[in-house]
Image 1 (cartoon, helix red, strand yellow):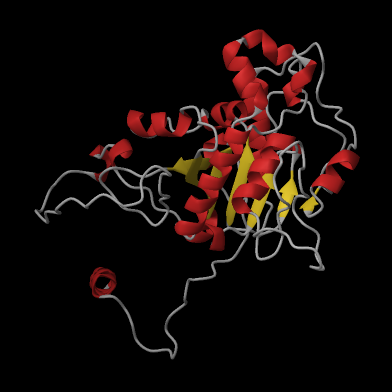
Image 2 (image 1 turned 135 degrees about the vertical axis):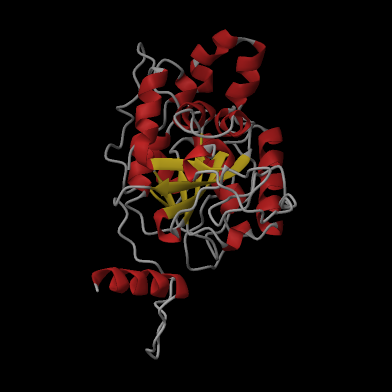
Length: 330
């Protein structure tokens, strides 16, 4: 899958499609327009591609629930003084008390909408603020001693003053470096060693991270926007290697903005704007990615072959064509 073979679908104001996802800020679909069945001589080629629905096989689609982390201490300091982003005091920034309130509200939304029961996998950037957001929003209930499974987060992890979070009755969590924020220069975007994270987040799977230390972050070189976008496409390509169909991704504003900006050029400008605008802290947007190539190989699980038991079933229009061809042949 590449930029040419992957679309992101968002709700249109006029049409329905089986590939749609609900915008996080709206919970009801728009009323469909009245359809007129007047005959027309217009060619399908004359129809505007930006005003018509897309139609794709379901097995070629994945639903992504994209989340930007909640408010971190670096967001507060950086908004007051941009130079603060260079401060070592913000190294691997953790969530603020307000950020944890945002996480609690997102969790309520995820529970109330039934989203928590649909998600097969949670992918998280391996920084403190994103892991705190991910386990708080998508994790289990409060952890209790005596339960024979590791918690997602131990008590007070990362100066959170937050109780431990259970891994019971929730999807697996996997840390992935590809969805990190801009790399370099800003200490808030540098991670700790994986050996330091494992005791804090025992049930998060860190096995896909190759280096214990952060070898990607460089003190004097900031990753370019174009490089972030390329990394984002590699991340989406990697998602297609996963068997899960509905995935939550907890990541960062810059990563989301530059990755999603590659999409939507074939859509109405308003839809393009919905795709590409910056995320607020702890905002969730649901989208569908579509594999137009043959990169995905998963079989359809809901399709049914029909003709069981077998019988005559030639459609009338096909029969008309067949008889016409036979008449010409004679």
